[in-house]
Length: 166
Image 1: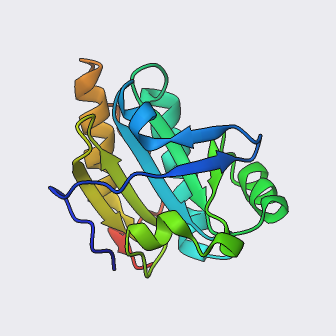
Image 2 (image 1 turned 135 degrees about the vertical axis):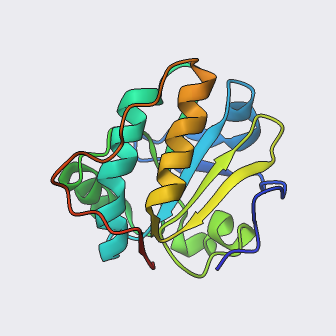
Image 3 (image 1 turned 45 degrees about the vertical axis):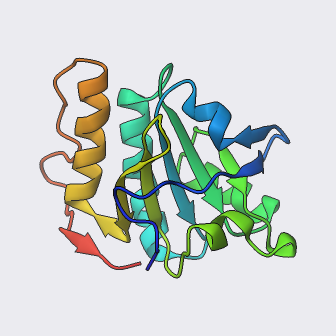
């Protein structure tokens, strides 16, 4: 669960990426919406979900939208996760030794939890676990911003459930 639902204000955060660069939510929102996906490397549903997030990023990421993975694990394991599951967008460290400041601010009890945060700081989509409709909604929102027709996120022959709890 999370206590941050669609329509709520997203708590701010400042976290460092694997490359050491700081990412501040308020600054990122000045460039456009943010897709923030919280995860743990050992979570099978996170492992299932992140290749689909990468697919959305490849199609609709870039200027005007920021994608962030927010890891609850150490840097070494997080780097391995990103490499294994093909994650090319920035991955931030929500550090255990600092008591998971972002995860706690968002009230997370399950991962993956994904938020689409609008430029004014409100949460447009709050999604827990793997949710096919929520991922399609995120893709549709981002396609709409680019004024392009969304392409299918899931391809024929893929075995994709409607929902997998985190």
